[in-house]
Length: 316
Ligand code: CP
Image (cartoon, rainbow, N blue to C red):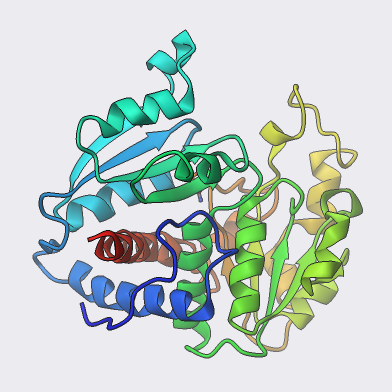
């Protein structure tokens, strides 16, 4: 890999704290790894003799598999931990759990945790790089890095002045917060669109436009990042608390081909997954030529390879 200057940070705790140069470096490195992943032999020896622990205290499909594949493509040794079935259930603290894992000579920790700030806390207690794979409703930095990488592929490397909207449950979304931070670093005009009850008041202070009108937002946008309604973060039961019914949500904020047709220019459609087909996005849109949803998943491996590689370089 050809980078001359490394990352400005020893951990990836969030997009907040990264510089534009960090994002550019991660994307340039990911581009090189994407070329590797398209070769018949998809593996490089960059992290040989390096061990990564993946600690998942919350459910995941894409992020967990993507990190594991990224680590294996870099020739790292990998250990996987999930809270279910572990001694966390017997009352062990996070720091004790991690210190026990590190005592087995682990060089880096990738962690998903339900509590915002868990990674920050852990980074202050241990001496290996910590990578945030999602912390509650706070940040999901590798998702934002792969989303912006995919947008650069779709709309061109310079995103300055492009109009990108994030639609849906902004209030409970770590993807939204990390995307806003990353898009602002890249000079994008960012709009959030959703019900009044699912948009936090403080977003204005981040220089973000707010809309409650999906049709207007479709006409404004070069790309739409559609988010899932996070019922699991809305309270102790699965009852809908922030809008009358899912059906009404879909009528106001569900993306269909008919709605998309209002735009005079092509609109790139993104979704971090998991998708709720027929709620925030119709199957016809999700499976259409407008959607880059599976490109996002493909790019996730290359972007995570870049993050792991650059943090390991910095440590080394
Ligand atoms: N996008 C995302 O974080 O998906 P998972 O929850 O499946 O990892």
